Picture (cartoon, rainbow, N blue to C red):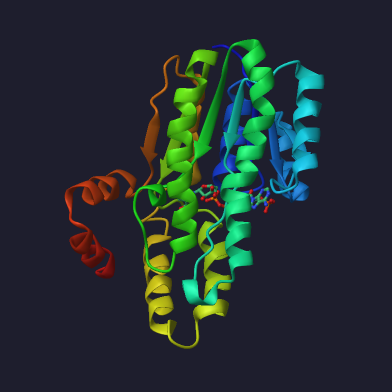
Length: 271
Ligand SMILES: NC(=O)c1ccc[n+]([C@@H]2O[C@H](COP(=O)([O-])OP(=O)(O)OC[C@H]3O[C@@H](n4cnc5c(N)ncnc54)[C@H](OP(=O)(O)O)[C@@H]3O)[C@@H](O)[C@H]2O)c1
């Protein structure tokens, strides 16, 4: 197996932490980045290099990329995984909160991608793996801003793939379904605060019931399911353009394709 130099964001929790560990243990040179450095300490024994990084901090992005280039002389794979779900009624979410959702889930990731492209072009090779979501293909109640970022990421990544092909750089999308991480907690608390009282209270209750039903060990996949897929996307000689992975991802994408908008609305309402 060819040893790759890999940078992965969101390595302090969930999918990112699992992927950083798995890739390092498979023999790759892995740098894990996140804001909570203390939450990445347990990755060090697997050989993961730990970098403090807020993906909305552009000078910090440059510094992180420079550090890896200085230490390794190249970056082969960037895994853009950091992200969160801003949920609540559009009426209750400020445009500043929505902009921040885009800063983390799209523009931060775009800035990081821009920073690794010059060295990848010089190498004549590289791979950008973007962790999207089944939510980049479908939609859910009270998730307008989250889905806006992931739908945007899908189009952005497809277009970027065309642009980078002549330069030997590939772009791959990963579309996880329901994965048992901190994602649901990070999204549910603030949603209840924003919209739990008032006009949208019943809809919040319904989303919370859905989370309780789906984010259980039986109805969701462990993060390892996604990190195995990420490893495949890293190591494949010719990766797929997108990988739907984890509980409900493929069936939901299929149903979205099959059903009319109104039928799919009804399906979501029945959860
Ligand atoms: N879990 C699911 O069901 C699911 C389904 C589909 C897609 N996804 C996607 O999978 C990705 C990983 O999520 P997860 O499920 O593993 O959730 P998680 O356990 O909450 O982990 C999220 C990671 O993102 C990092 N992060 C958040 N904001 C950041 C920022 N401003 N700068 C740097 N890092 C930041 C967090 O690190 P710090 O807080 O330490 O910075 C953390 O490591 C996300 O893009 C999410 O949209 C998840």
